[in-house]
Image (tube, rainbow, N blue to C red; front, side):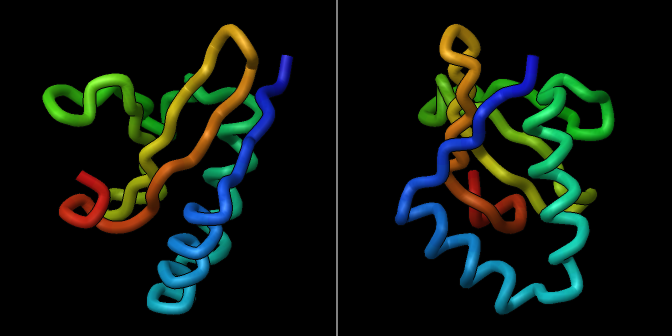
Amino acid sequence: MPYALVFTDGYNRRAMRFLKRQPELKNQYAKTLALLEINPHHPSLRLHALPGRLEGVHSVSINLSYRITLELLIQDQQIIPLNVGDHDAVY
């Protein structure tokens, strides 16, 4: 069963800034979101829960340098992206 990606206005603004600064990642970013919708547990996404102050938030990888943090609501089959950027920017 596919998941629904729910984008907030704040996330959309962050994603637009990210893609403006990193235009070469546009295809990888789109592929990551598509795979996230189909199967967020796919091994290439490297989905993992974050500890500490980000407890309750998960992260997936766009590539080795860039991540998307998200709220994963399994019961509602919804995924809410929160932030996108390099490791330091999203954590």
